[in-house]
Length: 522
Image (cartoon, rainbow, N blue to C red):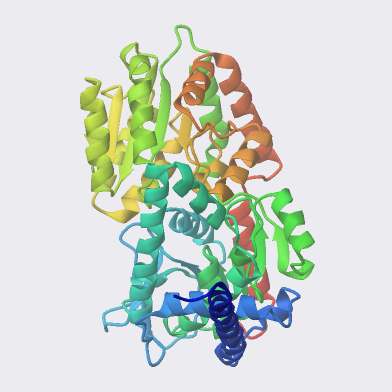
């Protein structure tokens, strides 16, 4: 049996060995990090004012980059691309991997296209990208607008992005369903985008260059996802604009070498405070599609008239589900809680399950549980007919309408299309928190979203985050009286008059001005 002093010596030896191994690991990490960034186009360390990151930062970046790239073997050369006519948006070109049946080149020199780059990770980035293209189409003579979704380009890069997105979406759903300590952990993780997160994101962008190299580097390039903007900068694109998401300043959402446009003033001065160069930062406004912005005066007037009508017309409550399919438990509980209002004829529900089969099932179970009959809309033609009928002054055939699809585009577009005929949008504080419609901000997924709810509330067009059903129901009570809805719609009209919703419009204008000033642009 060992004596006490022998046990102590062994413990000390083990601890010293662990410490020594850790120090050797840190030394290795510094060397591995320098090797990793050796051929980078951009020096991220200098941009974040940290030219010599700590060994711990080097280790963190190397580990996370390895996690992102396990089993990944990129394209050996640039992926050849071709523009195809969109079957969803008239006049829009969608880029695909070249297969020999794209738009023919007649040999004449054309004005380089405006490229809107995105990644189909959830609905938000796609929604912002489509909003941007709506302002780009026809904005500059014969200049075409390309929709460049990295996941649409068949390649090893697209598969890698898809695999990592699946992990992120699964965590979002898990955090939303389990709540408690899991939600707290995920929430803190989503708002901790420090300098190392930017280093990791940029390094990932370096790997994605093959799916962008098939485009002309002189083309004006607007990205609705920072990863796409990183890849464009790494490729050498000269005119890259990054549309910054959310309302919480974090390093990983800005892009060195690009012009970073933000939606609100608090984000603008927080990025300046962090050290983002003023020449690479600008306040633009909210990312909103053209038809929604142009429809603001009529939509707000219709909502005010409905709110002030005698007898009062039912409150049209639009409840969409995000691209990750999170919030199933909370949203279906909200539907059950609102059921008494529906039965009394006080509320009409527009439920957008998107392309999520599990959310369609969950909504139907909630409606059946409360004995609420409903109509279904399952395609774009029926969706537009539904909207046109409401614009003509009709009420929907049923107090509850379930929107459910098999195609991704219609799932994303439905919320945009319905916003001008709904009275209130009930959604988590995501990209929709910036939309020009009165909003009931429900429980967030990720702590970074709390700041977007605050932005909507301060503008007078949305509530603060309602994290419980009791708070949601109290707000619905308020919406059933004319005062709050009238005030919110008047605020939207006032905000519109000073350009609050002109973010995408300004992004396109700036990109085209920069492109037209560039003598190399044919």
